[in-house]
Length: 177
Image (cartoon, rainbow, N blue to C red; front, side, top):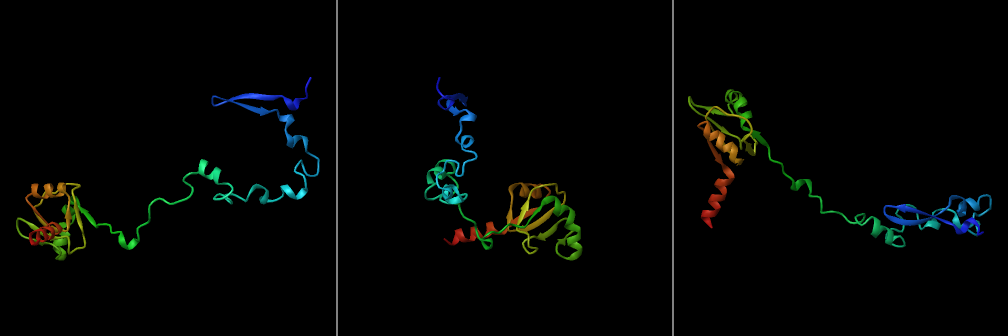
């Protein structure tokens, strides 16, 4: 009868049949207690040089086949980062906030009030865009750089008016061209 080294165990692994050596027949088990454990000279299996470098060392050279197969997205970036000086977030305000704050702005002198209408210049206040969240019941004439359609509908529905500065500037440019 042949020795156990010649018998391999067959296992099923995710639908594939693989051959696996029995635990007692492994080289590491057999070589325990010997000086070099089967690696020849004692220096040969010492340190990270025997495995081609620590971690990703050799990932672009001798270990490239492993890197390209199992970590295809490891090298190379995705896109670029815009400089902070190029990024500008609009200062925004909702229609509901105007409804709440309009009396305070009138008392400070930032907004003007007639008997029927309020007038407010958001562009001078440093607010770039008017958004349409919330309700407004007062008639307000607002001057602003940008405005959403929904905000414009709500203000005009309450009897107010929206003057969009950027749209006026583009109309002037179109008429000149």
